[in-house]
Length: 142
Image (cartoon, rainbow, N blue to C red; front, side, top):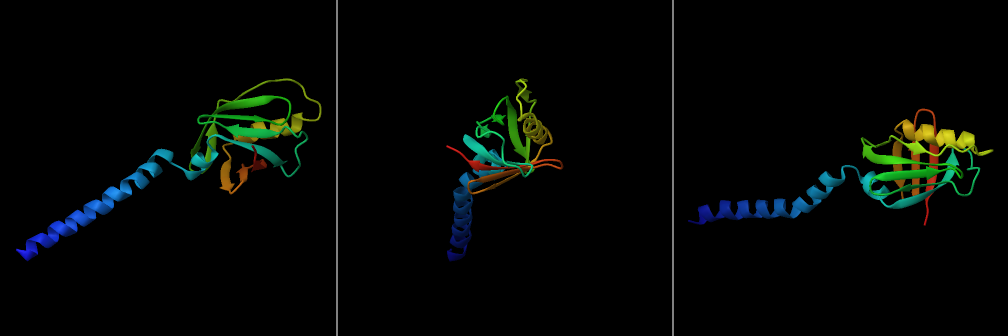
């Protein structure tokens, strides 16, 4: 009966390999995109907005588990977020509406960028959001 033990052993080995891989497969299925995991519970500081340095040193963006918030230094904006196909999809976004001298152009650019479902690229401590009309480069904050 040596021949009958071999298939059982091979079957057992295959079963063990599949069981060992389940946690890895489950993690991929639940997170969907690696970018989503890397963004959850993080804070980012704007380095550039459309190639220009931020007008305010308070310009930042934060990702909680399901909510995103952003400011260029005056008004705050935020809403729900998720990653779909490498793009940041969110909203509807709510925003305060105060007039802030010198900040309005960048605030509009960031609001438009978020609304345009930008592509997301995370590399180390750098985050880049790019749409057809706008681009923001951010660095990981505290």
